Image (cartoon, rainbow, N blue to C red; front, side, top):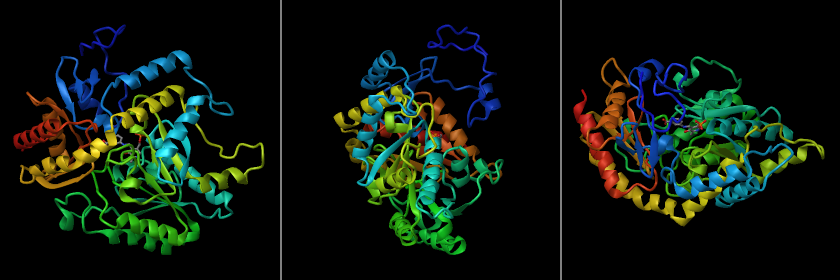
Length: 451
Ligand code: PXG
């Protein structure tokens, strides 16, 4: 296959697609008809043949400030030339402390300690290990069960796969981690279809946790992990009162609550974290992606000071307290990108912008009610989900075709995610009202053109 790739200096034009085993991709069909992105700026991607694509997904829910922003680019360039890499096991560099301080100060009160990872998956597994280490240090080592939620996504490492609730992601890897269970998902199309914002019905889904506490006994449960708003399983917005109830049941039984904010962190809902938006504060909070605008791989776990202190103080002086960490934890380039990104979020009021734009985004999205194939529309902040009626005998095909049609739209192509028969939107937070309208029009045309 011959590809023109303007960025591939040193690569021959005869680019082979065989060697790269692609992640979460239908490798064979993709390589038969590859869709390549070779440049990005602001709200857009460009294909090698010069087509400009409106980014309706902020990459993968991560480029919240828009693409290739100059202050971030320059910070990475400067850092690469100053200190490319430094170990962070029993050594440190200044940017790591600065980065942790910036994140702790923007976090909900109480979440004051920051552990750096390189991805959302690593953050989930780190948080699970912290929860188990905490109970061990506290003298309750039987608390080891992790409760997740059906349709939850916590990445693809072993802890996150097991605590996750997407059957397809789990089925080839049964029981790699003992001691997980799941409460049911909050999705309730019969009562909540076409809700704007948080659905009115379903707070009682949190009562499932009481059932599992009775079943396993609280003395065996370490933590509950949920996305405050489930993203990758198809935009499942928590019903009013649901998260408050989950928090109350955890408190009642002394169970830690972990929020996976890999998607909701850094302005997606118009606030720094979803914990602020819902006014429900977890004990551990995982994040990644927009922490540094996805410019360098990075994630983090935020912990309550008491969790940190319990683990740290349980170890004899002079010993490593938490036997966990990555070669690239707090990588200098990732930290430089983080500091520049967080400054940009403040300088441009990007979270406030998302908050202002959210009602307009909601209004535009819901004009798709009545469009061909649409059976539900969900939204919160700058996140939208459009659920399509599955095609008989071919679940998932309709959304896949809509995604391709949006990408190949002749005049106004757009990048839209799909999962199952749900289209998901999560544009960069700098999206304009005109671009929102364009995104919605492209989707409407795509839906009209498919069977
Ligand atoms: N937790 C949540 C809530 C996520 O959304 C992860 C953990 C894992 O992060 P890493 O950085 O390890 O990929 C995620 C990732 C999609 C999509 O299409 C979503 C994610 C990743 C890829 C695709 O919705 N979220």
